Length: 139
Image (tube, rainbow, N blue to C red; front, top):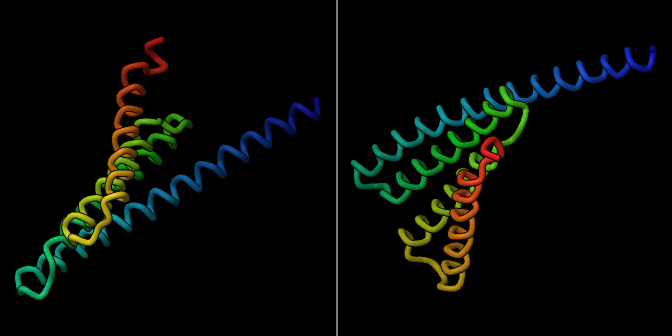
């Protein structure tokens, strides 16, 4: 009996701790998204004054998309208490696309690295497609 009460107490402490950490990370991600938006407007100002590079605007916009996907993943985890594969693969796909875009815009890339990142992008895209087609709730 006492053991069972201790387990229930541990479960409540664990769930409350995970919830607090998740909410804290959500607020940090929200703050990061706001700061990234301010950085985009600052970079656009530099581009308009012709002292900045447009590739930085693209890079920062893609960074915001990554942050938004991470935000969605944590918000979904807070509600459902599980990590969805589609959100994680979306964020990873966006990170790789961001890196490929930066390489192409800067024209400072090696062919083999570009091929490896493209292959990784293909594998992640297939993984995302399969995870949607064979969703656990459909089985």
